[in-house]
Length: 106
Image (cartoon, rainbow, N blue to C red; front, side, top):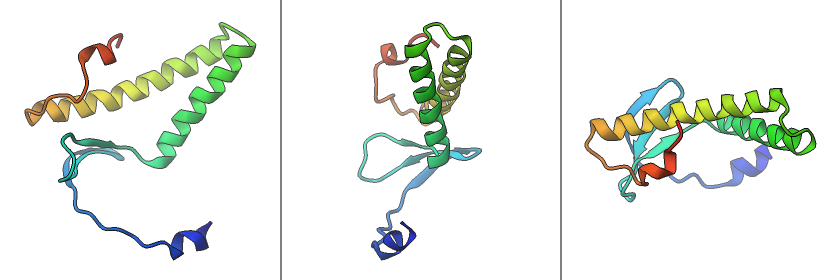
């Protein structure tokens, strides 16, 4: 896999970093209307794994308290990311690229 990576061309593109918080950032590419939320791949993979394990467990044991706790944790993590993103957009006077109903139930 490493050798495959080294054989690929790397494309460089400038982005504006609107804000950073820990290992996360809100960035703006010149060719995109709305900013992006940058999350490290390992963080994204861990959240995916958490949701995957919880879903599998709940299919086998509906109502499993540990799986429900994992879901709650994952939703809290994603909510924190989304609140950071929305706060940066609001500070810069940028409308959200989605309707508020998409993120109800916080």
